[in-house]
Image (cartoon, rainbow, N blue to C red; front, side):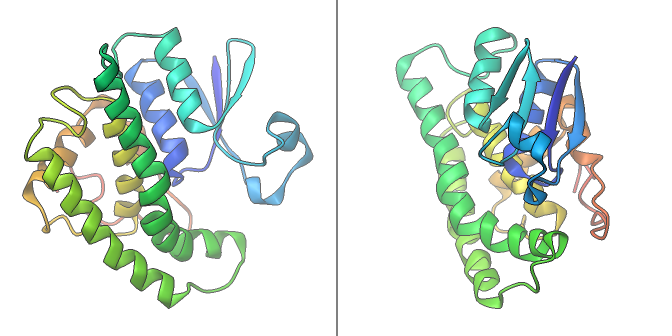
Length: 221
């Protein structure tokens, strides 16, 4: 059985979890307090980051390479288009969410509100929280622009780009930091994706000290 070392609200870990679940790869989840820099964990990944996946007698790190490895080893159901242009667009959007969205939004909201408390690093920086709350509006508007032109973020079928976006938004939704009233098309997209069987584990997450909001696991919001 595969084994994933993860943190429940990490969007990078959630992206890998979604791919594993979508491809029906049975996996044991092991919560890893990576910030404590445990020697055994550092042997698995000297970078000291999650996710880390043990699969096929290999130790895999970095969420996007893990997801692409899973796609190549387990191509059904597909999460990448066949054409070069489509694959480029998926990779562009995965990078958008894991780089730009993460830097401008996730790190300003989730990390300030949750990670600092869990890691014992003090109180949230109000300036960062305000910046994240402002930036997420731009990103939701960009998603709405894409979804006005496409059925899914990268095209006509669901792809890894949708899982990357949903991983970040679901983490933020856990702490009620997503204004779903800002865009009906984005809300409808998220309702579609969170109703998938692969999302059940994500919706079941419980983080000590941070209770789920009542709407979080509600498929109809």
